[in-house]
Length: 300
Image 1: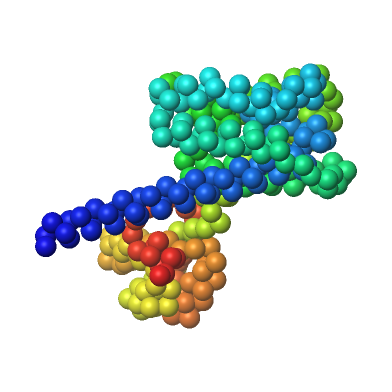
Image 2: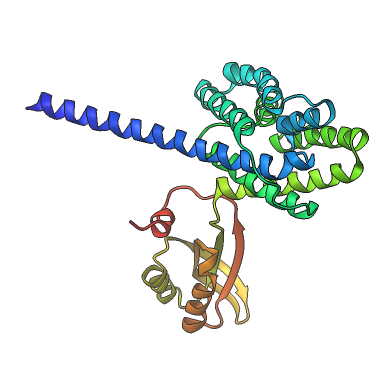
């Protein structure tokens, strides 16, 4: 009986792992399709560039009429080799699938010209490309070798990934301005900025967190209200002494909590109702991990 239970448990774990992997590759496929839409429907027909290896492939296609898909694969090979030996072999396997998929999609997909407005081309080309890149990265793969280069140089020399990619693209867009035109280079920079922003939003999500620090004589009531009405966790510090409107203060509580930005008005109403004279400080939170907050935001 025990042996049967172990077999069932092992089978269940293997099934979950398989479904998880299948989901990752499915999402990578969605990312590849979105990126190829951005390229084929907007950027490629109009000679606009994105950053990185994709941008180089587009530049070579527009100036030398070399097939974009072939160039994309060839230029990605050195970066994938670097990633294989220095970063993650699993990431390399996923990235090979993603890059080949993107190359095939670019080769096979055909779209009518959506618009000839250069501003709309930059915006929507960057939007689709950013969504595709973000979804792909979120599932452990990359569509562009410049990200691999950034990770490698960061690990080797401590230079930030953002600075490496920025320098890489600065050189690319400078060459574009000289070879093609300054206008194309400027619109390409706009496309790159939109792509980068959408990529960040796709990876990090739209959750935006605010930290709130509260000092009040009615801290007990405020703690209970935050717990009951918001369901948020908190940390309570013991203040030794301070100085406020009523002069010196000793032995008071300092409440610290982190909430979603959408809840900031709600917590302010709670504080104002209980203690209008409470001292509060709000500040941006870049990253959170663990605690009650995630359970609060993602109720099942």
